[in-house]
Amino acid sequence: MELSSEEKKVLSGITFHSEEVEKGELCDEDKELLSELRAVKAYLTDKYKDYNFEVTGCEPKAGTARDYNEWYYKAEGVDRASAFIAMVWDKDGAFDIRDDFYGETIKEGASDAVKKLLGYGGFPVAEVNVSFWEYFGKELGQDLDPALVLRGDVHAGNDIKIFLDGSRLPSGSYENEIGKLETSLKEAGIKGDVYVVVLKNAEGDPVMDRLYSDSFELS
Image 1: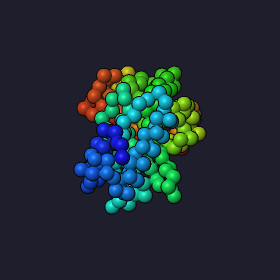
Image 2 (image 1 turned 90 degrees about the vertical axis):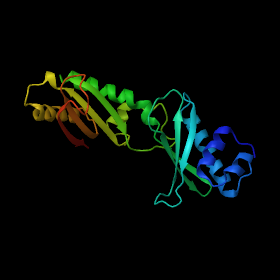
Image 3 (image 1 turned 60 degrees about the vertical axis):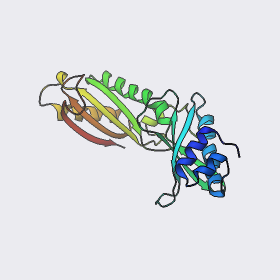
Image 4 (image 1 turned 135 degrees about the vertical axis):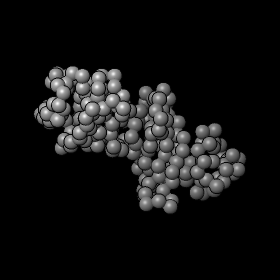
């Protein structure tokens, strides 16, 4: 059986039959993993046509409480410390695949939208980072509108982190300002878990230079 160097590398990392994999002599179990690996690669390539992907590993469900395999992958040109994850369920020989890469395609648009909204409200925003906890299948691709996610029309598990420039806030007013910020986001229809950090200034370190922090949920 012909395998690419990428496929050999991944399979050798998750099976006890590395020598057989190198020769292309796969047992039934490894053939199933190879089919799933190829399905993940094809799914990602078809769903996100503007990107090139490399599957880098797998954490099989065997021995865990999960009923799905976790496949790790990276995208060419995307610099990220941790791998992206695709979840795969085998349902009567058909693969049900869900991924988290949509978050990469919309995070900038979502973060900019929140930053612009708060800027209009007069809040001294230093930075906004939006991430997501949910995994989606082929029904949602790279054309997903960030506004639909922020409003909760698409439930993506929004995790919104907002950093404020404390040098532009009256001393001792942090709690009141965050209360106003919460109201502003709520009136705009934003949904998700929000974490707000007040920094010493706009260039402050998120850990070392925080003056105040609070969190709330918008549902």
